[in-house]
Image 1 (cartoon, rainbow, N blue to C red):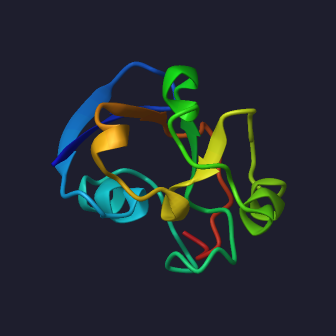
Image 2 (image 1 turned 45 degrees about the vertical axis):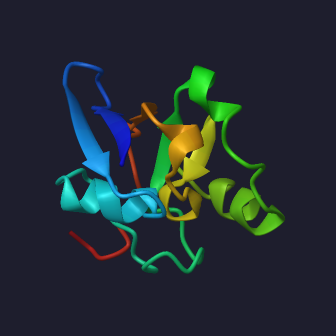
Length: 111
């Protein structure tokens, strides 16, 4: 199991969840009730699962692909440590991963 800490956009609240190793961060976030849309269902065709990874944890992640970088260019409020949750596979090296939900996002489903 991998522990993931989700921080709200305003930093006022946090949620700590346990996730099975190998699970994508997108599914973990959605199951935990976090506001990540994931319109393309993890096909890397949108940026609605954009998260901001804690700077201390960012170096633990594999480098983003060129396709992911292209999608992050479309994300509202992207930062140097932004990633797509659909591209983060959890495991031992990411235990205690901390991610912040961005303050704004594009709602691709019109909600």
